[in-house]
Length: 391
Image 1: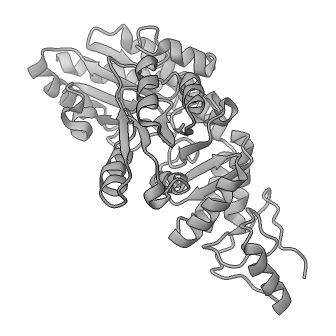
Image 2: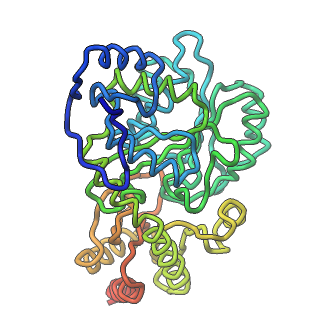
Image 3: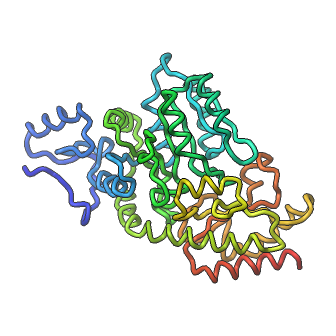
């Protein structure tokens, strides 16, 4: 029997739960090899272990990230769980440090799962005035001596760009491993592993897939010991992407870099336009020199781009802003609808207060995920909706 290697350039969808073997000896060898947790096995056994279509998609992601391995999961949250799994050591688990400005789902996972269910000693490093103080970070690292540090390169929804390279260097100097959620910048703008991060996570649902119809996550790294541990954990917990979704992802990835470049170009041009509009009080976009972490953004991305998300606060008195926000959304939703995600090829938006409540006390604030539509169309939709506020 020939080795069942797969050509990722032209790959069928293997929906098999279990794979066909002609010889008992091949089956024995497959299970023996499985003890070494190979990323791409000679013989596939069972789709919860590994599937050839999923491995093919992982190889495409490895090329983008420049990583030695990638493991796909069925969501961004399951990717986070997978990445953290290698640091679960029962009573021997040392403290973990998370930055405050991270995805709300991750914060809920920390509170409800890591702390309440698993008893992990989790600490939080808080931002101040729209940035992170490196001197205070060093003090907390010295104080709690964490086993790992977890942060997002760009926060949601205020788009705080971390001084990521300095954070990584400082954490590694203090003996901590570093996990970076790089969903907002993607490998196009920054590759954390090249700056000595240990693991990088992406919500593939967002820009990598980019069409609003596929949910997935990925963990990537270079340490093969981490790879072996995660393959085993993923196998028994069941964090496996379906073959059909992996196949669609391979197709989506062919246009990813083109799509993401358009997202970035559109967002910057639209942010510059919004910053000049009298109906906007404040525009939060890392590509604007007015942003609190603009210098970090330039340093990290080398000016190649600043992502596809704009958060802006409508002008008006505090008691008027909520109404202004509602009027704006009502007049634009036919073209830019309310959808609780981001990174789609079409523009979508969220009113910040509806999702984050009082955490960000700006009732007129909107997070706009800028799509890849023609920029003149986007400008027209936004300006017309802004005009309706005054009317």
